[in-house]
Length: 202
Image (cartoon, rainbow, N blue to C red):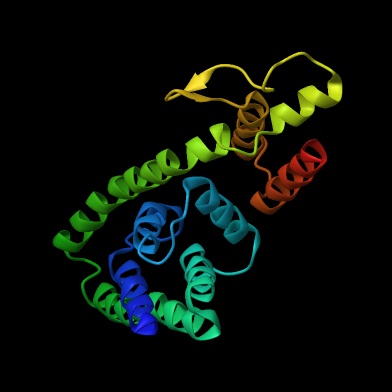
């Protein structure tokens, strides 16, 4: 039954999704493949939408995939699947953390998990970087056409054998500068880049 399959698939994300958010992007991507043949670019779009809509990434993605796969019932099954294990596990962990907060074993485990979480986020970056800077929707192509610049495809260079959109790379770098150097709000940066992309993409 599709509802049960959706529930189990996203319950797996809920149980194994250590780090949450971007740290479990790769796990989410692998989990949705049995339900739809989703390209990395389409998945990157879902991640982008999830970042600008209320709610956690895993919940938003589960709702979307469940709805596409089996309508409202599928959305409910997938969302419940990803939320229920997290709720149960966090309830247990909070109780244990309060009881064993001075334990060297617990503190050692947390010290080991922190760098692993950074690695998981790095894996998410690897999954998303190709569709972000070398996907089908290239802003550089449209911009070069508007400016009358004779660049055959509107980009230059290559990444893993794929054409790289220079405009997307500039926007990526600008985002890092705004976030790290100028401490701008993620909401502000997302809205700014979305507006810039909308203008360049028209």
